[in-house]
Amino acid sequence: MLIGEKIKNIRELKNYTQEYIAFQLGITQSGYSKIEKGKTSLSLEKLEQLALILEVPLENIINFERNRYFNQNKCNDEQWSTDVRSKFELIKRLHDDKIVLLEKLIEKTDLELQFYKQNYGNL
Image (tube, rainbow, N blue to C red; front, side, top):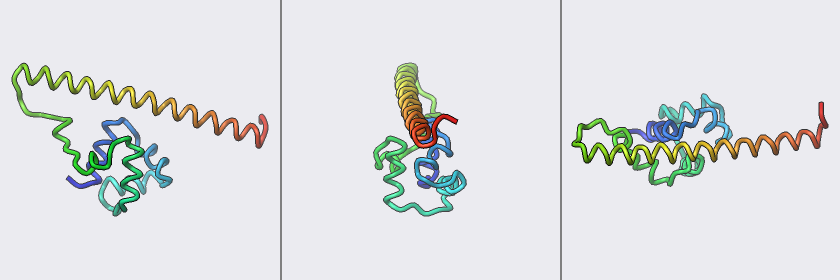
């Protein structure tokens, strides 16, 4: 799997949009799309920045394996129960991460509003 595909899969697991990641990177959505499609080379610095935005260690991006998260193999009841539990925990973590992200976005928006009110008044 190419690094762009790995980044895309992690982004989707985190339920982040391309627009959000592009904004965090300071690039356009179409520029970010090229990263996921492998049409743009990634520097180590940009990859580290992506790891921070996705809130995962750099190694997790490099070593990401889709089948770990989307296991489509048949398994017995005990394995199934364990898989369901671990997937539930993953979903809960992703949900909690999304709440934290939304709180950060609200805080950032509030700061921007304060800035505009201070500099331009209430229009």
